[in-house]
Image (cartoon, rainbow, N blue to C red; front, side):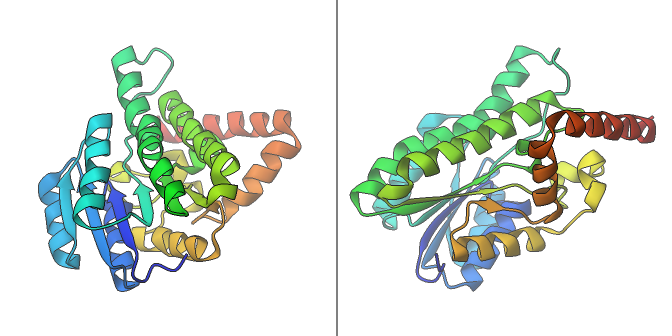
Amino acid sequence: MELENKIIVVTGGASGIGREMCRRFAREGAKKIVVADLDAAGAAAVAEEIDGISMGVDVSDESQIVNLIETAENDVGPIDLFCSNAGIGIGKGIDTPDDVWQTIWEVNTMAHVWAARALVPRMIARGGGYLLNTSSAAGLLSQIGSVTYAVTKHAAVALAEWLSITYGDRGIKVSVLCPQAVRTAMTAKGPGVAGVDGMIEPEAAVEAVVETLREERFLVLPHPEVAEYIKRKTSDYDRWLTGMRRLQQQYRRADS
């Protein structure tokens, strides 16, 4: 997909990777970008910068996602690319309270489900469209120290896979963004174990996004090392689990 003259929606667009997506897509010549975020003022600031449109949206509420899509399509035009990018990192162990589990589940996983539920039928009816879902390398590997993040990001990858398998022959293209540590508000206190291969800037992550969209590939891997880690995991699962335990021990020592 070339981004020129496309109508694009970006959730979580007020900061971090989402904000850089909006800026880069504008430079690529997008026809119009809808910047959506829980931080309505931040979304408005980004929209003003790129001559876009902003909406305050809580992606943990399906009705607000549906309204975002309906408003964008009614006021701007058919959405060519929907970037379901908003995400959070809360919770740690299996004793994390159910309400925290529910919140991260809704934002990191169900928001993608709700967007696809509303958009896929529309896109199929008009001959196709593109979904870009933001997950994490944690969705392909795991997240030491946070079961809530690992599980919800795995689910996001699984959903993207299923969408591609089910609708790929009907004009729906799907990519999933799976970075390690990126310099955003989520990593403001340090990258943790996700920074094992270094911290990259949002611009680098979005460069990988643009390249992958152009080639219409599934995995967006701003950290190319992740591809090798996936191979190690699938070639010998037990050995990979042993290695992850060692990494966890190193992380705990460094964190103590």
